[in-house]
Structures are given as structure tokens and as C-alpha cells.
Image 1: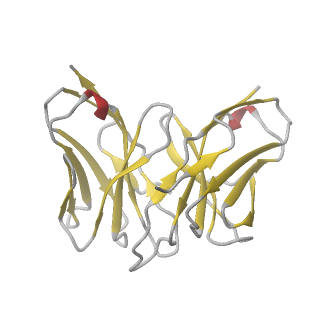
Image 2 (image 1 turned 45 degrees about the vertical axis):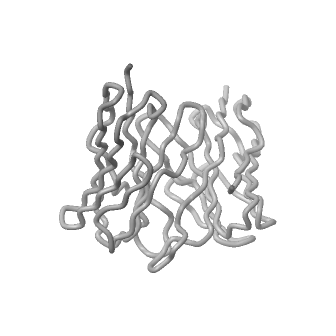
Length: 112
Length: 118
């Protein structure tokens, strides 16, 4: 069943603001997490990943934070741009030998 | 860059037709996946394959079958299409099966096939 979820189905921000998208996971065996971005009409694209031996990982304008104590994952986007408008999914690797488990997604809308 | 391609972007089929959705990846990945994506339900795994001629059921395999005769190609088959199979179908591949101490769990997705069954 579904073990990965996002707190909010939609998030609206102004251009230039920082965005935070949250995700809760329930499988304590998961040790690998990914954030994907899906633009309208396209397949999901990898943004950033993190392993459970890390608390934070930074990419270009994006940061993923992992709190294993409360099983929480977040994606921070700095200086959000209209091109960041998309659906964002978190995913976890769950039990050994299983496929990635995806959350339902948060739709980020960025207005100018 | 990894490239995952799907045979059609849009497909319209009639109820009862047999439908083939083809997916090809060019990075010699062992694992391939088929998902369907519906509003409010996110990505749901239909089937996956971790080797040629191997397949495993995902969360919603009913009404579907798959074929993997070659490493680079993974086909999804709807034996008798029904209207409730109208959806966006996404194929993905990954280098190594998800598991403990695995380093390459990232899945690369194709652009999707929007299937409408009338």
C-alpha cells in the first residue's frame, strides 16, 4: 500500500519566494529517497536524491532535508521561478527487493 | 543521457481491443517499470522487470500483462481494453534494483503515453 505521502496537494508561491514541499514516509526500512519534478505533458524527471546516512543534500537551487526521527522529507527550492511550476513527487525505496514507492504529488504554482 | 522512449504519445482505442504499449531504453538498464498515473492517485506500479524474460506484479496488475524479450524493451499489453484503463502510462528504467546498499536506484522515465479507451 501507499506509504509515502505529501502534506499538501497544492502550493502557490510568488516568483522569487522560497518554496518548501514536504513529504512524510512511513517505512523505516527505506534508506534512499528521491524527488522528481513532472511538468505538464512530460514524464517525471529526477531532481535530487538523498541517502539515509545524510540529513541534507544541496543541488542547484534545491535542497533536500531528511529527518529520520520523524520520517520526514522536504524539498526546498530557492528563488522560485515560473519554470518551477510542476508536480513534485517524493519516492522511497521501501523494503529490499521492491520498486520505488511514490507519493501522490504536490502541484507547485508560481505566479509572477 | 539516459533515454527512455515510448512508442506513442497519444493513443485512442476501442473497448475490447488488444493494446500494445512499447518502451525502449538505451542505457543497458536491468530494471524496467510500467506505471499508470491518474489524477489524485499519483503513480501506481503495474508491473516491473528486473531481467530479460522476468516480470513481477506491481500494485495493480489486473487487466495487464507484460513482455520483456530483450533487455532494452519492455511492453505493456492490455488484453481487452476497458474504459477504466483510460490513463497516462509511464515507463521507467533503472540501473540496479532497489535494495539495501544499492547505489543506483534512480528511475528514468519516458514521456508517457496518454491512452483513451472509448
